[in-house]
Amino acid sequence: MGEDTWFCKNVSSSFLFIAGLVFSVSVILQKNLILKTGQFLLFLALSALIGRRIRYFLNLIFLFITVIFNSLAPAGRVLFYLLKYPVTEDALNSGLSKGLTIITLIYISQFSVRRNMKLPGKLGILLGSAFNYVNELMLSKNKIVVKEAFKSIDKLLLETYKKDNVDLNTNHCRTTISGVIIISLLVIINIGLLYF
Image 1 (cartoon, helix red, strand yellow):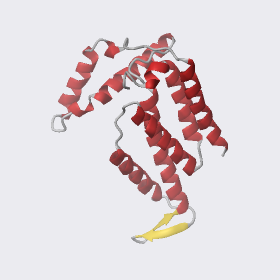
Image 2 (cartoon, rainbow, N blue to C red):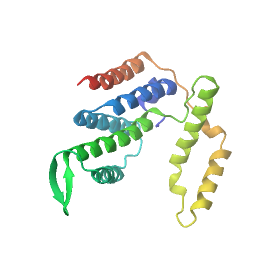
Image 3 (tube, rainbow, N blue to C red):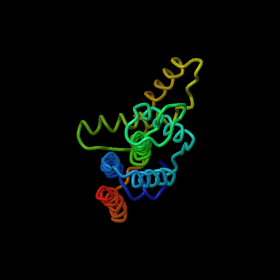
């Protein structure tokens, strides 16, 4: 996350992480495909706003593959035939919903998990460290060479491990009143969408 973004300056990493858990539950429980698409667009925009890289083409490929595999189990009204294979409404909607859910959860994670996340307790320290290492690895994933996959992955893991606790002590901020208001509004909107 960009160190100079509004969210980094006004929302603590632990508060944002807890909000991210609530966002995730609201996306998983959402049944309305149009509202789930709105949630996807919201978290895509928030991820872009904080400086995360958005991979539109990979999102489309993942969504397409999810819909294709879900269509292998036809259910409901037949919409059309593709090479003598029925494409059904329920299978299509279910595939779109599953694909959007997974992609939205990825963007929620990008938005709500920071490098400097600190959670209370020993389990919190362990979880925070795990998330920090995963985040650091994701930032370095372009260093993996396909021809020497095991060697390059091993080198990347060693480099990440050797860093001083993956920069755990950088830029800890407290949640301001405006941060609480904005994140609370986002939580209320996402939970409220479950009732439509």
